[in-house]
Image (cartoon, rainbow, N blue to C red):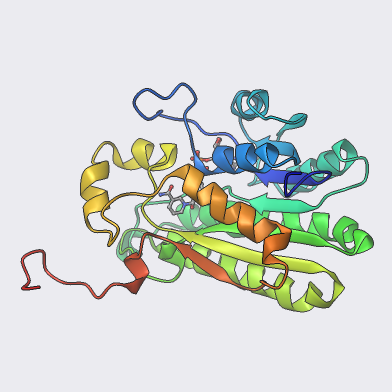
Length: 267
Ligand SMILES: NC(=O)c1ccc[n+]([C@@H]2O[C@H](COP(=O)([O-])OP(=O)(O)OC[C@H]3O[C@@H](n4cnc5c(N)ncnc54)[C@H](O)[C@@H]3O)[C@@H](O)[C@H]2O)c1
C-alpha cells in the first residue's frame, strides 16, 4: 500500500517548461517531480498549470488517474476554480495541496519595479493563500488535510539578487504558519520546504549551465534534484509527518548550516 492510496492531491504549478537535463526525455521541475512522486505512492493527482500542455505532459506520466487543469496563479478566480475542479475530480475529497508555483526575479532594492513586485506577490503569495482558502472548507469537513508550500532559502537568507523574490518567499512562510496554527486543532497540517540549489528546469532556464559551479558552494558538493525535493514534500504531505506542522524544512544540501568561508581558507 502506498502512503497516499485513496488520497487526492492538487499540485499548483505541476508542469515544467524545460530545458531537460542531458538524456532526459521529460524536463523535470520540482512541481512535476512532486506530482509524479505522490502518484507513485498512490495519490490521484490534479495538476494545475497556466500551460495546459505542460500539465497534460505531467498527467500522462502519472502512475494513477490524474487531471490537468489550466490555471493562472495571477488570477484569483482562476485559483479558486482550479480547486473546485480538483474537488470534483476527487468526488468531494481533497487531501493534499502543494503550492509550488513561483516566479523569481533579478531586481535588487535599488531598481525593484512595482510591476515585478506585484507579479511576485500575486503568484508567490496571493495565489497560495487563495488556493488554501478554497481548499480549506473541504479539508475541514473531512477533518484532515495537508498543505505543503514550495519556498526557497531566499525566504530565510538573502540571495542578494531579487528583492521581490526574497520578500514573497518570506511572506509565504507567514501563510504557511497561519494555516498550521489557526487550523491545527481541526486536522489541518501546513508546512513548507525551502529549496537551495536544485538542478531543476527553472534553474537551467534562468541561470543556464553551471550546475557544477552552483553545486561547489554547497556543503554536500552538488546541486539537489527535483526528485529529492519531491521526497521531502511527500514526507511532509503524508502521515509519516502526522505531528509535524508549521515547519519550514530546508532542502539545501547544508547551505544554511554553513559559515561562509573563502575558497582557499585553511581547513
Ligand atoms: N533551484 C530551484 O529549483 C528552486 C530553488 C528555490 C526555490 N524554488 C521554487 O520551486 C518552485 C518552482 O519549481 P519548478 O521547478 O516546478 O519550476 P517551473 O519553472 O518548472 O514551474 C512549474 C510550472 O509553473 C507554471 N507557472 C508559472 N507561472 C504560472 C502561473 N502564473 N500560473 C500557473 N502556473 C504557472 C509553469 O508553466 C511551469 O510549468 C517555485 O516556488 C520556486 O520558487 C526552486
